[in-house]
Image 1 (cartoon, one colour):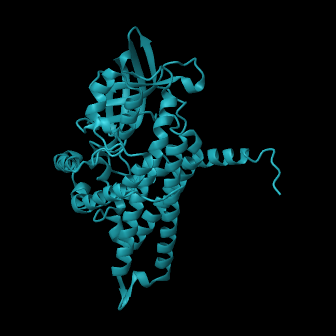
Image 2 (image 1 turned 120 degrees about the horizontal axis):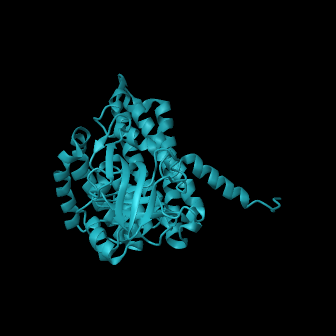
Image 3 (image 1 turned 180 degrees about the horizontal axis):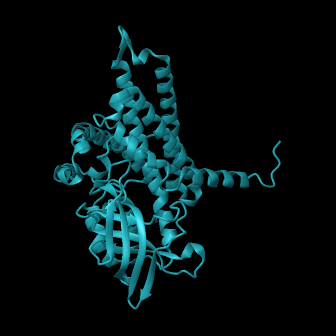
Length: 401
């Protein structure tokens, strides 16, 4: 694997880094205290600036108005933008819209693409993804109580979902629901587009995450589907292929998340080091003179470098060999990078002391909202067990000398 970054990508990443530093980081103090609704107009202006710079939607196809970057190229972009909570949204490559764009691009009909895909890529509307259910484990998407029962030319959807990120203000949701209960396990569910103004789509609440419910894009919705009737023309891909499509979506999504987490690591690490060299502990002594701090800095730097190399390798494997061949690498980075980020953010908070607990820096925000990294898209334990099982299987029948 060649780690050389092309001159074009170096320029792209440099421009994005500069934009984050100049335009987004100064907005973070307002972001911590204001609602998304209060910030949306100003964020829209930043988005217009990004579009004029031709840096909009880096991971989306050129024919749709994006930059058409490869997965590995987008990994570099995601790391740069992840340094600010506002980065991915302002550059139009934010979850869950990024994954929904992929689904619509690959599996949408002409009519679905015209109505939903292009406005989504253009940033004119937002969307959400409703798969995780309240009473069932999100790490096993084959277990699902939500049903979509056939009724003539329509489906009638009933079910209870939560952690539908950004449901508040979204134009539509892509819903996973059981359409074929008698089919084999992996072919029971389907993906269906449900407009959020459709009767029977009920946003119950924005779920408080460690005391913060949020609003608009920066929220996680609990959604109740009650006799929600939608036309069968809203089906994405073949009926019963929801799980297959979900796996296509989750693989690249885990690369995106891991590189975003590494961006968070970089920001937290920079803040930690800056605090250490400036915080006076005694005359002529700063935190940076303490061996425990020096040890933490070394450990964080090494973990971050290892996590970054692993993630770029996984992205390269996906680009060159496909999702199935890269599944071991994807499982490994999912739990390794999440744990690295948690460690770096925790150490940064500790070095900042009481300041780290406030919203005067983004560290507390990262601590609240990124702890879930070890849970969503498959809990760490699930990925570890799956990877360990696959590794051990390769040793069956072998003689090691």
